[in-house]
Image (tube, rainbow, N blue to C red):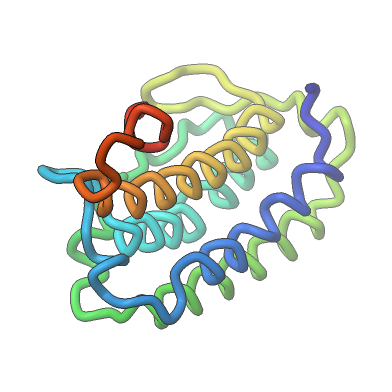
Length: 174
């Protein structure tokens, strides 16, 4: 499927409500547990998504649209680990929904035309990218983290499902 901004925005707009539906009001044990080691809990994922709203997608789109050739500022994928200490999941879900709403308003205000989507940017690690690739990545990034939240939650009952594990790909594929 070729990137289409008109089709991408509704997906981006649904992510906060999707995560809220999955996580709001469930016990802390579901949202604070991870898959072990340094893996992320659903709480961590929401914090990470907020960081992306604040420092990644729209700031990088602005750099591309400025036509300055300036490389993107590196994204700290782990900033949420310290930034969100002491926060509640409810507060994070609210903050994510608000930041996403604001960013989609900004995105719409850009009034992007097809030629704009081909504009180049410079990722600090990956090199040349286009605005279309950045925006497509935003969508896929959301979907990947929604899947991650579901997988991490399913992992909590990994030892409880017994012989059904082989029929539950969410427990056997990463």
